[in-house]
Length: 59
Image (cartoon, rainbow, N blue to C red):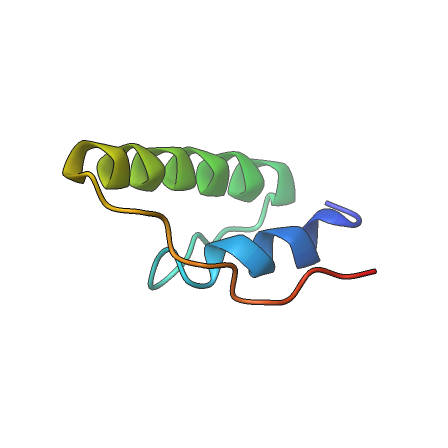
């Protein structure tokens, strides 16, 4: 997940409480992506806007 960590923290930090844990980095990343997809879908079903990014854009 080189380079992806900051991007994930930027958007996921304000989207869900808790997290996804495990020993296999690839499996944790896949599980996190699945969790985020489900949360985004729920926001859409509820007609709610997504939270603003937790970190400012880098660059």
